[in-house]
Length: 252
Image (tube, rainbow, N blue to C red; front, side):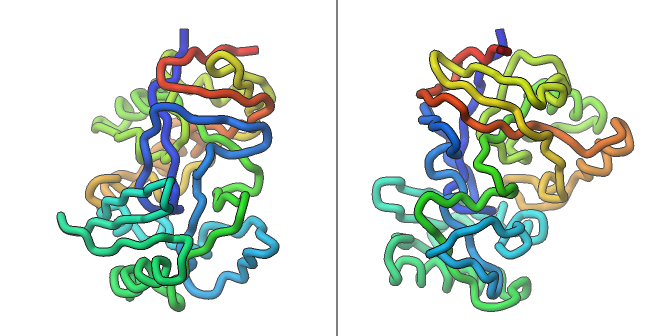
């Protein structure tokens, strides 16, 4: 029986993940706290009063700003405090709900990404908004067997965290997830999701999530060997529930 192996969320777009022991899924929503904040890279036009989807190029992101992966981050959901560690020591800390806290984080990125900025970095947030790579509110899913198959093709280890998914599934056949578009899956005792899209991979997956070094060419490898650059799927939550690692994943 396929099962959930790991659950992650990414409180700040482009920065490190939180590994979760449980997650609440609600219809039409992302995992709570996923891509809750983003760091604007120069004026983006984002209006917190009228939040809308913007392409990831408007924000700091791994596809272009691979040095972000070398940072270690910790986000406290209760206080919305983000702590950033660089080179083994804490470099910045701030409550992202307050002007002072946001300013502390913005000052750090103004220095850390100085040569990659198009303008002053700014912490962005809007109630109920997720700075996802797609306009729909989705949960991203990676098949660990597909990652293992990709390792065989490349001949080197591939950390699944490169794909920055919310759910990692163990027990599916390699690449079988790509055929699930339009189908529904059950996760845990009550959650139901409808698969809506295959995930087209970008150069962010080339970045080692520990070192920030571009050491692989995953989209090119997928295209050359499989004829596409897809790995993983997006799914919309259609029935809510609490999920946890070890929960069964069933086709409906």
